[in-house]
Length: 315
Image 1 (cartoon, rainbow, N blue to C red):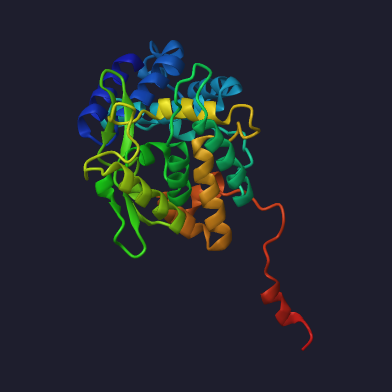
Image 2 (spheres, rainbow, N blue to C red):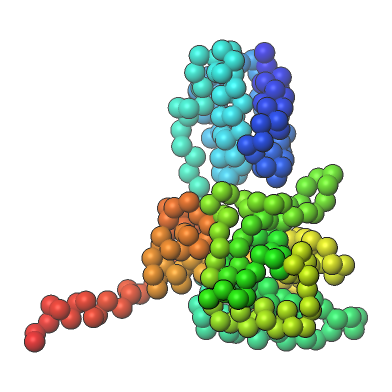
């Protein structure tokens, strides 16, 4: 049996067992077709040695380390099926060398930068475009919910009014879904977040509550209505929001602030004020490890612990 045949069986398996979401499966297929198939599709299973796979992944990693890591995940799954079907005695990819990704410093917004960014975005959305047409008028509101929740862009755009409890003390939003863009189906709301830990209820700070009360008073929404719908009242596409957000910050000096930067900013602030464990809970991570590695900016100065250190001083 060749890898191409086995890959077909594996994709059928994960399509049917329901353990992977549509987006994940599409990503696996894209990785297989672009990175794996050109080099390995015709290779027989008995020729899939650890050395061969190690050389393949190292070659891919020379140009695209992230692609190599994704390819390793897909190959682990495909060859794992071969082991379960007794076509291989062990998974040869298990002992390939580690793929090192270049580490990037986490960059997060400070409260002062958030105020400056708000002013820039508010001016942009209040001015008509070069053809005199009105622009998206709710970017500031979306920004507020990003900063109040630390949620992913798909999670924020999936919030419905029925997910919001403004009578709670303090008010809350339950993150219960995400927006998915799927080939052949379009953009829709998936009724569960990206991960199991992502299903969470977050408490809202006063500034976000004020935003939601204003929107509720002016829009009179139904419970099933989206908090941030598209211009036609349907589920809003993350792609379209990113385009609007890119236009709003163009030439501002804040071009680096993608929607994901808000998530990192929330994590960084909570880590400094409370702990990485609480930051992980807010973001919907299963533990603080991912949060600490990818979401929390390292402080350029030491935190203020002078009250504790004062105990070493003279009376």
